Length: 203
Image 1 (cartoon, rainbow, N blue to C red):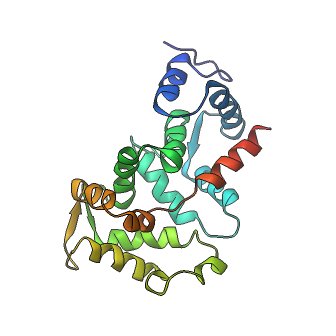
Image 2 (cartoon, rainbow, N blue to C red):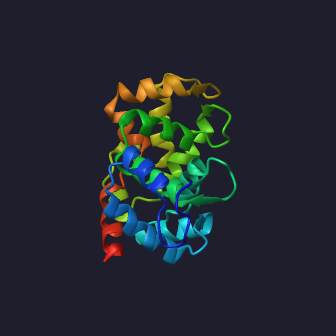
Image 3 (cartoon, helix red, strand yellow):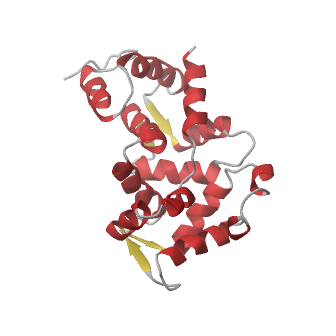
């Protein structure tokens, strides 16, 4: 049922999001109003999503990463995200529970969606994360992870894989949970920046 009238968030979706994220009703309603202003249709396209990331990260090139994040949350592959998918995306990428977050991270790296990750997919995703790091900060990275290739090699070697091997979801999640260093390498830590931007938009 729920109220689908524009400008009001249905109780159904509101209850669902309050249950599955840490956001309050007040925050969700404020974000929904902002969401409708920017996306009057109630759906956000990949281009709009990329635009949001571009405004969050003016000193970097977030386009490829935004595309990977969008793909991983566009669960019905219709090329748009509704408000619920959008909020779940924000929650998981910033502060979701570790297991859910790693399930999402696996989907992010599984570029072709076939249930396994290849070294090429690791390189492609790591490169998109690397592009998010401003040039100045890249100069300060450790010698063995200061290029996307080195980072991808480090991850791949940790799993003890040969060049053309694959990693399944269970193995990926277990490996990352057992090694904080790999957890740091596979993700782009964006929470604070995104939370601050969202708070600004609410005012």
